[in-house]
Amino acid sequence: SGQGSQWFAMGRQLLHMQTFRDVIDQCDALFKKHVTWSLLDELQKDETESRIMQTEVAQPALFALQAALLAVYKSWGIEPLAVLGHSVGEIAACYAAGVFDIEQAARLACVRGRIMQKATGLGTMASLDLTPEETREAIAPHKDALSLAAINAPQSCVVSGDSGVMAKLLEELQQKGVSAKKLKVDYAFHSAQMQPFVADLARELAGLKPAKPSLTLYSSLSAKTEESFDANYWPLQMRGAVRFADAIEALLQKDFNLFLEIGPHPVLTPAVDDTIAHANKRAAVVPSLRRNQPERESLLNALATLHAHGLPLDWKKLFDVKGRVALLPSYPWQRQRYW
Image (cartoon, rainbow, N blue to C red; front, side):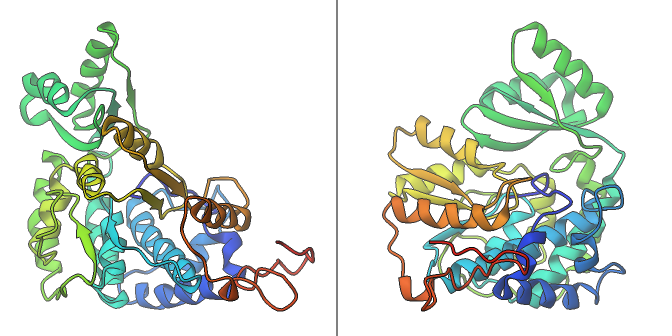
């Protein structure tokens, strides 16, 4: 999942879990080569002090959390056959597919976040219950002031651009009975407002060396699998629309039927459900974590749901000799056993 899924205490309860903590510690050390703040500090701040909603912190932090969750799932023997990412989530998807090692992915997340931070205060975004064609028609009179930023589901799109023009568009749509909601952001990602930062991102990513994917990897920019993911790709990805629904539809057409959202809150799960229904396919989508919900229980629920949908599990990797979940140790103040 991409930016917007983050919240101030995400991953905090999982820091007691060694597999998860090892990746967070590694990312913290790698981030310090590129930023002046500490990932561990940010993940443990109070809500009033947290900067996790700021782009330059949110994007690296999301990558770190997603990489750590990936390590947990892999330690349970759960391996993906295909991956895709929504906007900044595509960095973690590339890491999962072996396109980047963790050092290159960490650098990409920090650089992308720092440059996109410059767009703060320049615009806004809104979610519309319209098809892509209807969305393009709605914003056409506003030319470059508004852009189609994301296609999340067959009838759910995000528009991005000038705040004043956006307010007029939302008023027009509401008068027509169209469900439209302004997002709580003060930036206009994936729009023409990102064009001034394209050259900066391409220059700072010079030397990026993507490898060939080790598994099926769909691009959120083209909804295809034949992308280079080099230094020229990411500026276009920052500027262009996120074709998430198209990529999910492509996976459904290849008979993929079990989806797992890797992120701190299921912001994409409803969109995947809608896309599955639109394609008239039998498939399921499982979230990993939920905001303000016990993270240990959320992961166990995800594990159980995956198994209930037919995913085989290696039980020897999950339980210790005393019947406790070996890789999800209880907190120091908790002693109950989990089965």
